Length: 469
Image (cartoon, rainbow, N blue to C red; front, side, top):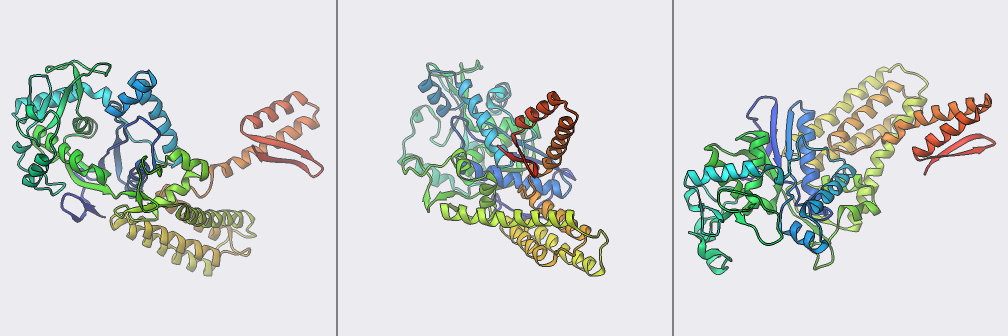
């Protein structure tokens, strides 16, 4: 399995630190509002990486944080006249709803920055003790960038170029820094802000230290994969490397993965342009499986352009897969025979080639676009070769293959609702029995139960019909 490592700028063979196990950290959102589709891209991309790793038999410890203390959260809390905690908890809950809609698996651990403050203070103290950080008069603690000789190795930036850039753009508070490049590890509280006691002052951590600490606590000092959007390469991930490697004396992460930007109608997404799209808004127009399909229909390192036309074509393409799965399910159920013919056995062997193509695409830096192409080849193969005369085993084997491959991409092609159909039919049959036995109380009880499940019954001459509310 090869993946593109931002650190080396080339594809590398993936070799985990510990055989059969993957330690993976993905930077999560700052929770001050509903997540937007730019937040959704890394969530979907790296959830798919995790799913493929698990498909290949790896045990994945997947950690993705929520940044729940930040200037934007505090600003929103002040605007609403509530606590920062109330804002962050509200939007963590909303984020989890959207993640479930996109079929993003919950992380092994979703740490919150505010619950890891002690660890941050410990790491900052270690950096101060080792001479990599220094406090100033007001209690702010800065990291000494120039003391870490490898600074810039991830973003491939030159320190001298950075230095001249900083001279052109004076940073507030720069006068108390030893060097304009130094960045904040701890800052003093302002009026009305959440704060924690520390050896330097009552205050709160800088953003970069949070991920270093949460990664170390839940995954260890060295990890396999660190991932996020390409906007995080500099300064966030660069600073994480500096802090972690100076504190722990070890390489922080073996592989760095970054997804490319997402544009809207060929323009950068921004509130000022009025093209800002939240996942919740998208969910009002489309099933979020369509958004997931759209995201995976491009390579994660390619810039992606979001438009109404592309979403419509994604919706239609996904429907082709879902329809093929539904047709296979019907053919399997209605098959006149179970026994596989010799011809079908040959076709089953041929179909295994689509799994090989799918895996080859995923092994080549998670090329989900090519993996989807393999799935469409399987769909065409199934539509061409499965007929009313096919055996249930033949139809079932192609259905299983289709469901399995789509599942690796997090695409649900056989809806759970369909699995509920039997339970609904059974309850309707029980209700009919109760009515025959004149047990109307039981019949009404079952009707109410079905109503709670969102099922509406209609008694007709042809029998009981039902539909979802």
